[in-house]
Length: 157
Image 1 (cartoon, rainbow, N blue to C red):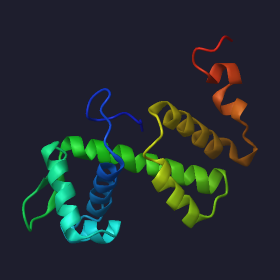
Image 2: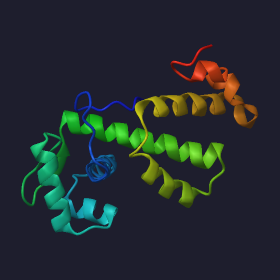
Image 3: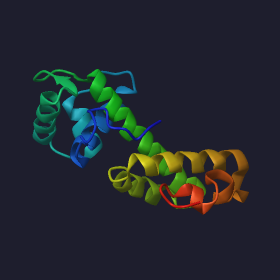
């Protein structure tokens, strides 16, 4: 998993766009066709709001949607949605399993945090969670990420 943008260097989707792409991705995982109603229900928004958001995503080449039809992610949309979904799952696991945050709180916090982390921070969290999975609660940052000087790019070692 990477935190890279699928839309090119320097281009980052906004929080709302990421939420809609993630909602389509999650709904599509059921194997059933995704409809505007499914997305509206999942995000707690109105159907006209979904239609408006989908029009913007379609203009960016991230989804395909015909009026009253199914919603599908394009290849670029699927890449972007998977990136957001993977970030969300990583953060949920980190907050819940590593930090011990209660599940509902961890889920809410993951939804907030997933939109603002840099790719570099995501990669370090991936390493930390992998270390936690391998070594359990006894793992320390130094074991997984190296000494502090090695963790800070550009810092003298």
